[in-house]
Length: 618
Image 1: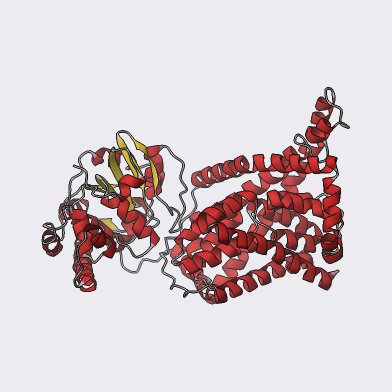
Image 2 (image 1 turned 90 degrees about the vertical axis):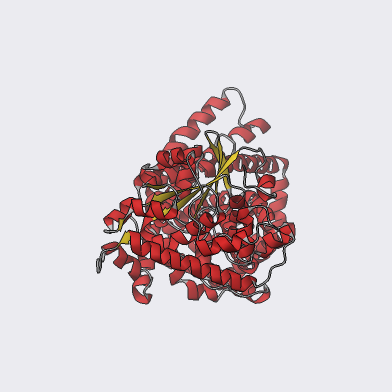
């Protein structure tokens, strides 16, 4: 019999098939199981909050769902509310737990046991537990929980198939006796046991759903919490043996990331290393080969010669295909000669930071600093992901604890954070003009970030929430996962960018041939030439930037600019309007009104900041 009572899950996932739901704390590896069973690609990273929405797929005869990581089932935040409705509708739950943190993870395990839903426990990271000298008495743990416990090392593929096989044998486990009495007392008014538990724990949403009046909700929740915590502590004492006084190098490095002096030094080293890899090696050495020698030296002469046999380069169609902004010339060269190596290089760097476990420590390290702009340290994760792709960063703001923080972080992402492709172009141009100009560019963007964050922190109502974040173990990134994420992210980025680039090039070519581009340049000349001190042709780059900011930044590379003009142009383009795809995500996440406010404001901020900088340096 299905446990689904009402609703929410049936509305979310219609179909009537048996529902297998993956449940666990943040960062325990649920998505590895989901990806292996469903065959769908999902992100796997070493920081909490990678999964921010329910993912659905098929695994044999089962509909399988991956839920956001939660510490308990309830209604305290968006992740818990989403996970709650899916779990309440599950036919079987697979609870993924971290072998190295059983005292934390078993709390959620016991809550699902108290619901009476058939369950299998996937005991993940057993390889790390063994490496840490942690011994777990599996027969005793299985006996105490009353459900199958399968040891796994999911990222190595160990135990994944065994857990899916065990799903067919899943049974409800042993509930906490005192909690069982409280749930039983409600079953005359609530016919479904999982929801009766929610009401017993004081969940107002579920109580309202059943028309049940809550009495002593807070006290009931507290009493059940204490009972469950005492049972977890007793269970861990019985089944887990830990070595005493054993320290490891990576634990030491993890602590150093949080100390004021060493943490700042490590951050500086990380930034310098990223600049050397992306800005110097990829944007300089690699792009010189891919763009200069391969695309402009070999490909463009070949494609122009080939197309010219049938289409005159002087004709309208010739200009569209092989002209200055041609679909077969500039578009292909920018995409594959310039952006492809830059995006891939950036994603390699970002994946290394993610899988090492450094990002959550960076969140803790910068927490106080982030408080100054109305955020807590957790916001550094969507902001850093935004450097890869602003759309991804905007979606990841869902992990933040309040509407106010999501609004501020979204505004910062769309106002001042350049995406990976734009960063690649920017670092390449800055590397060519030297350190002083790079420092001025960086200081200008940082100052704008501080001003935008401070103003938003003052005007957006609400309070900044406290930082509550798990610090996962520092791990050596696995090359297979780095390669897989880099390939998939780069593929999706290029797949999304290609039609926009083609549309932008086509539009600019038509504007050029019809004379509208010249009129546009004339109309914008008071801004581009008079206010920013740039050549009139720079207005073409801003037209391209309205399609994609990286497209616009790439357009700046063909202009003859002095070093200071380069800095002014890059600052203005960095702050310029979000690309069309980002704008669509912005509308979806924050609504049309807020999205349009950000889009219009970015025009104003970009040209004001660029103009002020021009007045200072030119």
